Image 1 (cartoon, rainbow, N blue to C red):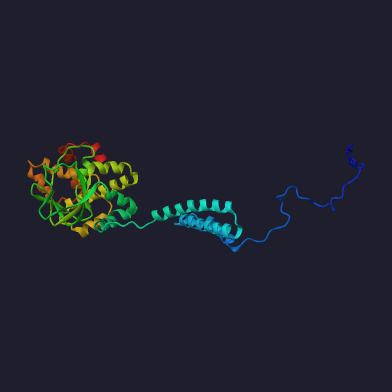
Image 2: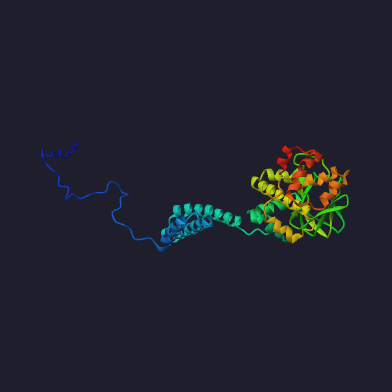
Length: 340
């Protein structure tokens, strides 16, 4: 007969205080550290240094995200080396391989976005003179000039537009090379020089009234080269790019002002027009489209045309004739304010 040995119950006497000072502590579980292990290999510490440096890079630094992703990539690669060669830890190697791929892809993408944008030689002067001072990124300018537009040429004497014949709804152009002259019924009005819109007044006017014809004749005075956009597709593109839309509004308004100065002084050359480029607008309340068409309305009275061609440069004379221009062109004051 088997007998079971019962262990006697240990009874603690009343008032007994256990001696914690000499007691031996035993670990609560098997994962408690009994002794610190040796320091890891140098590769491990270099990997963590890379992580630390990457995380403390200030966000004010222009390339901080590229540096961060680069250092994280290096750190993950060092962790893989450490886990494979010195610890033989498969799980650490796998996780850091995943982190390495993710950070490497981000790094490649950021570097790709920072790549230098190569602008065509024919368009570089246009970008530097008109768009770069307004902080238009090169990639945005490349999108603007890489779609729905092309570079066209005109030989000396060829017409870009003929009055009362050419529609203003089809295109918008900027002159890249050469010189064009604008005339009304054989009377010279002004020149158009490189890096200037050819038909900016018509573009601004026809945003409200479609189906109009040019009221002036524009002829190439030299062998000309110009950048030409499809107006409909350009308008659609600018609607999807609010920043570029505002840039175009400013550039077209500025170009109209410059043409207005040229109307008052047809002898202005390219050098003088560049100076006007940097001056504030004094005549922004009267568009060239209205001035051009006012001459058509005063064709019965040669006095109005002759006064215009003599270069009435005073602002007071322009203001006195402003209401006459509105009535002749059939444009209300409200529409004029929208144009300008």
